Image (cartoon, rainbow over all chains, first blue to last red; front, side, top):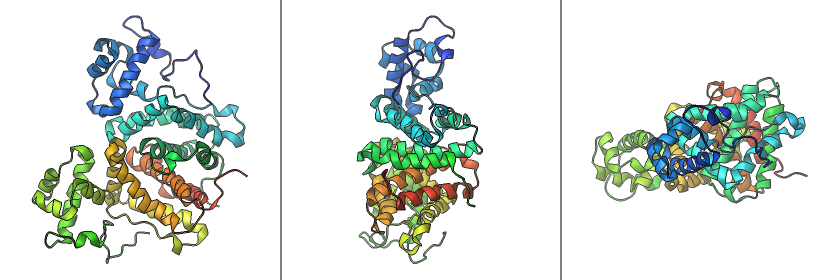
Length: 208
Length: 208
């Protein structure tokens, strides 16, 4: 589940950012900026973070940050979704998709690097209404997209229910670090949560 | 599920607060302070909220706030858990406990008044590591307590899984207001989520 495709940039922004105007770009500079941004968003929150502070942390000029990411909002979205791609559910047998969905995200959250990105996104999205629209875009890409690709009835409702379970898991285990959840072996969490997600994908959503 | 017991104060603090030292207290003053605190915590967050600001909003002296709640932490806990008592699962048939659990909280979250308290607690707990310990205490009281009262094996793991589902629902529907979840009729959410909570209460947590 930790497969990485070296042909794709790891922030989910795609080609639009690697072309664009304003001169040549390097993947190394891009990563340096994103790591600096992630640290500063995580400690200061969205409102208190400035392009200038990120540039200073990265050791480059603020105009370079703007050239790579266009705006604070663009920088935030890239930093918060680093390394996270939607799961490919169509390649998984129908009765294993719940588990595939859960393992796809959990394997990234357990990895400190992108786990930090999840923490950033949740802290800022929850604390700051201005970031809510970015949470919606992330849901659309990472959860609704894969569910809709299966051609199910009620895809949006099913994706919404899956979001409640997966974001609740991220919130409790990685952000709030509620005990005993934060200390449970991962497999003890994956089995029951995968069963839930499988039902949200495949079972009737109403009684009778 | 909206039953209120008029013999109990609505903030879950119990008698310890209505007795205590420092002179007589009134339930009206207490409520006025809690409403002011809720508004200010919700807009400024935990760190930026001061006892002085809450007192000013409530139109009383800061020493009165201290007399009623002892500290900013005590005030926060009371404001964030206003109107929320744990569900009494033992009085519910075993196969309806998942639904009872979900309806108990959702009926309060749908009510604007205590819904606001949920939003406060989640915004501040997620944004501010200092508040995490209060989230743990709230989990222990509202989720672990009722599950443990049933004498089940693995009560702490079961309660943890229930927390991921219920807090994820609160996060997505009431805090982030993810669509289409925030606009779905409540019954379309309660049925599938209640089935999940019922499984976390009653079904095996591991394969085989």
